[in-house]
Amino acid sequence: MRGSLRATGNLLALDLGEVKRLHTESGPRLARYVVVVRAGELRACSRAGTNRYGPLLLRHGLPPGEVLAYTTTADTLDFEIAGREVRVGGVAIYPDRPPEFVTTPYYAWVEEGDG
Image (cartoon, rainbow, N blue to C red; front, side, top):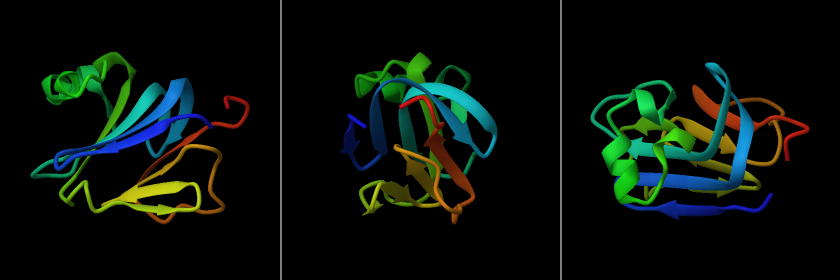
């Protein structure tokens, strides 16, 4: 996988390099960026066009139509990278392949055959 990770006090963004088919706890999604936004309350994943974070994403140079957005109450600078997994709050992102098992309530991974 080619991509990049960027974190600020309000946002963690994983760039997958191109639009990929993702498997999430809410079903399949298409996105280039998986973003975790620090917020006052938790919400499940959503397309950026259907949530209130579009202006924040644009300020960070992220096109809202290519973003899968999650929220967390945790500090987005307090993320962990374990192997090929990026985790912040209750969100885990697996950019290369599905995990053996999921340990967080919210997750996304690139579906096999789309890498």
